[in-house]
Image 1 (cartoon, rainbow over the protein chains, first blue to last red):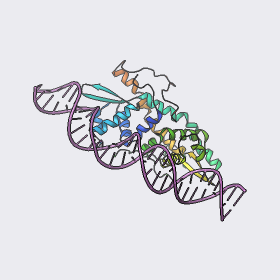
Image 2: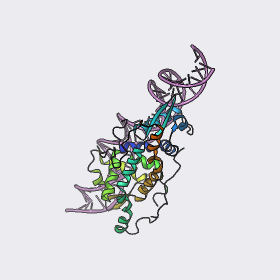
Image 3: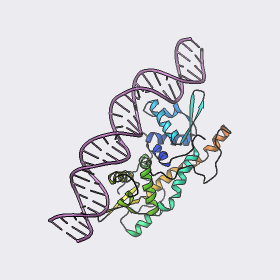
Length: 126
Length: 126
DNA sequence: GTGTTAATTAACACATCAGTTAATGAATAA
DNA sequence: TTATTCATTAACTGATGTGTTAATTAACAC
């Protein structure tokens, strides 16, 4: 058991860097990628990427597998599941917060509550 | 429109601190709390809490409402929805990653894949 | 053996972060 | 007006984070 206990703030903190977040996204899409292939797209040195990988590993977000001289990385599904559980556990609170506010302070809030219209940026590398 | 664009790494980064995370959790549960009441449980100074609140606000996670000399804080449901959307968008990748690995490297992984058995710590303040 | 490839660790520079106390701003209460 | 309450901003300190280059470890290829 390489991850005896996972810290939610550490998980969030590890994802709080554009390079690390895009590493995780790539690993989720591609499943397993070597450290070198992960480092290739970024304009920083390999040791810097190696440290980012260590941060993700210590947070329990990814695992390393050694194969010959290569390190293959993959996302730990269990940690992502825990992350999803956390946000879902609070969903009823944040999902209704807009309605609750509207009742208290009508018109004081934006009203674009439609689904699927995320304002979140999708390009967090570079 | 106080939040023209939200950065996912900034959102994660803001949640990557135990004090800030427990502030957000409390606001989700209680809906709206004054800055002073938010600061009270923590063993650090009020200016330090004030800065944590600013970090959360700049990340788009919370909003401030001014009422007389009080500042009331509340979670922005839209940002939490965007966070939930992000993790759900990748769910099929991380949810199946364990099975995929089991096929490639049988027995090399832990096998406690039951639902509801989170290893995540739930006490991230102090 | 020697050389190459893959990746990490070591040592260091610099930026950012998280905390402090003191000062300030702004509204309430007397 | 004066004092009190609520909260912030300013100035500073120490810790942590992120990057660099150089050195090291380890496996592969010859």
